[in-house]
Image 1 (tube, helix red, strand yellow):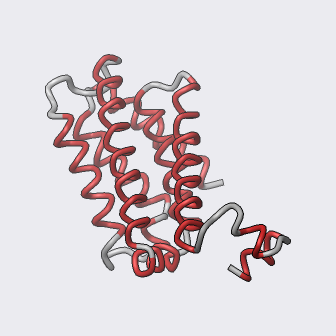
Image 2 (tube, rainbow, N blue to C red; image 1 turned 90 degrees about the horizontal axis):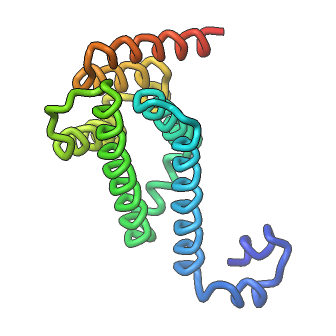
Length: 183
C-alpha cells in the first residue's frame, strides 16, 4: 500500500479513505478492468459491421489485450487473490459466451452463418479452444498472440459455421488482415 500511495502521490491515510485493504484495492481494480473491457467490446457493435467483421474486430481487441498482459499478473492474481481471479474468469467466459451467441444469431440472420447449428455448444467449444490454447505450453506467448495463429483460429471457427456467402466474406477479411499486417 506504501508503493500504491507513493505512485498516486497521496498519503496512505488518503488511500485508506477509498479502500479498506489490498484485497479491496485489487477488487476495485478488477471491477474497473471488467467494465473497461465491456465498454470497449460494446463499441464494436456501433460501427455497422456484419457478424464476421464484428467477430474480427472483437477478436483483434482481445488478441491485443492478451499480448499486452503480463503473464505474471494472472499468476499472482490466481495465487494471492483467487476470488478476484475467479471473478475475472467468470466475467470473461460469460462475456465471450453471450457475445458469441449474439454474433451467431446475427450471422444467421445475415445469411453468413448456418441456421442449423447448436449455438450453445459452438460457443462453449470456442471458449474451450481459446482457453485451452492459452493455458497450456503448446504455444509460446508470442505464438499464441501472433497474427498467423489468430487468422487460423478465426478461420477454423468461422468455416465451421459459415455459409458460402460467409466463407467469401471470411476470405475477404483474411486478405485485408494479411495485407495490413504484411506492410
